[in-house]
Amino acid sequence: MVKQLESYESKALGLIKSNGGVMYQSELWKKLELDSREGSRLVQRLLKKGLIRREKVLVNGRKTFKLYIVESNSRDPVLHVNIESILGIPCTVCPYIDQCELGGFYEPMTCILLDSWIDKMLASKEKRIY
Image (cartoon, rainbow, N blue to C red; front, side, top):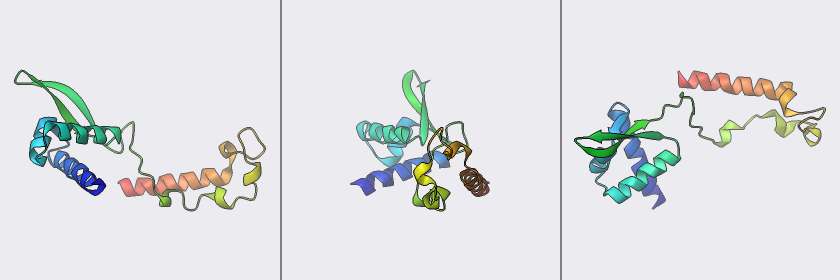
């Protein structure tokens, strides 16, 4: 059942993207052959995951929603976390990890190794985006 839900989410995102990143909610349900109940649940899951946003609109005298794809470089980016995102973090091999704390002599806010690793991760992410 979970695979089927993920499949519908992928299909929905694909349909919205192929429509220029914007689509009416009811149009999405029709294309996916879902009833309004299942369509609403699908949209709620996508909203909760931050993959889309929606806006109330009036079309032919009826209230509906317009769905928009949330771009990953927008103000509130969607972050996908996986094991690769923490591989190589210097904290895992730091000899001072037991003494590292906010306000202490060793702390994450002033750690040169951690700063360097974060800069490297951000630089590699920017290369993947563009």
